[in-house]
Image 1 (cartoon, each protein chain N blue to C red):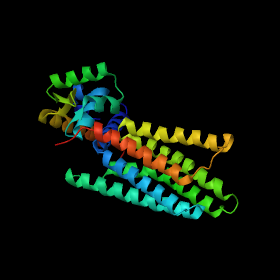
Image 2 (image 1 turned 90 degrees about the vertical axis):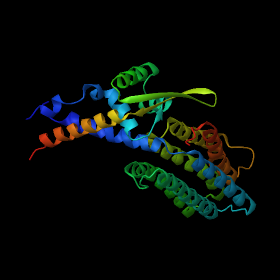
Image 3 (image 1 turned 90 degrees about the horizontal axis):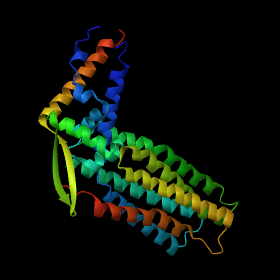
Image 4 (image 1 turned 135 degrees about the vertical axis):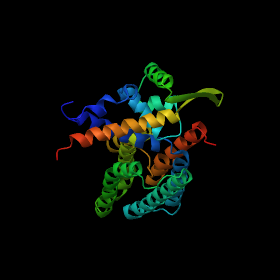
Length: 102
Length: 207
């Protein structure tokens, strides 16, 4: 078996919580912090930590605004994040294909 | 790395989450408001025209359900076209699959009650709204996996209210006449209208 694709998997995205955030954001132009937290059943602290990690990598951008006089934090994937996510999926598919019994 | 199960699981998780995310953005407020208004109108029609046979009752509310489901699909389609997304997308298909079993159970109960209506006419009309609410709550809860958490809570409101109502009607037995149409009006019309109004006021507006 060729271990090459596995070695190239993006370790930042590969973590379960961050993969879930990236997946949700990949299918949506933007999602609010609350929507992400509720959909993924994460705590505020956990979600903040993961988003910060993704932000540092340049995969996610965070915007702060106000809605009905209440602060609103929205997250979206950056172009780099979208590209890294597509590459991650492509590598996973490669691994699945490679291990498929012939 | 002995097998590729983890990779298959990851791909499945990604797919499910992306599907959830797609539906998460669907604006539910207009659908809920439509269901509420149509429900209240149907209740008023039922009371006004005294549709007090089980057959008449079932037919009226079956037509109401068809109008609401049809309207909901039209609203969802309009949203999908606006967002340049396919209407019959995999997530929409999954929601439909989640809704079909409880809806079918509700329809079967309605048909069975209609066929057996000669046995106990009035009680059936009182029981049907609770049973339908019960199944509808189950349907909302199942479909809620792909929607905001509020939809699942809304499903529980139907299930719990139906349970309390059934308990009250069957065991406590009310000392007043219970009108099935008003029950439907309160359950389907009132609850949808209240939830739709809440969503309308709190939903994030997209420019």
